[in-house]
Length: 128
Image 1 (cartoon, rainbow, N blue to C red):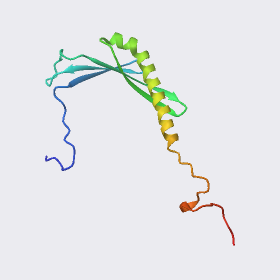
Image 2 (image 1 turned 30 degrees about the vertical axis):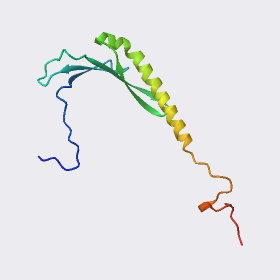
Image 3 (image 1 turned 90 degrees about the horizontal axis):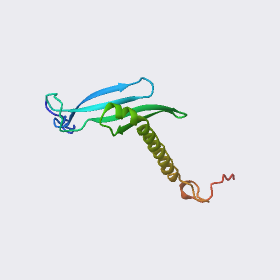
């Protein structure tokens, strides 16, 4: 089938493939292990295995999803380092929310004193 004009040409990078494995305790979260593979599906020992964590926290504003990389060589290390990774991701999310609030607050437009509609002075209703 021919590519439609203007649509992106998306292709998988055959030199950067991973097999994904997911581990969960069904309470705290999940750990994803990405095992590098070649295009035939065989393990690629020339690249490192990658670990990432995911969890959700219930906040007054709703559910906050957190995803973070875990520096580990084994699944056991990833399990041990999960809490620290989650804590760092939470701190980053809190800081991003604070920054978003600061940016939103700086965008608030305060009308100048005496500035009415259409740049006309006043703003008071006058009856004749």
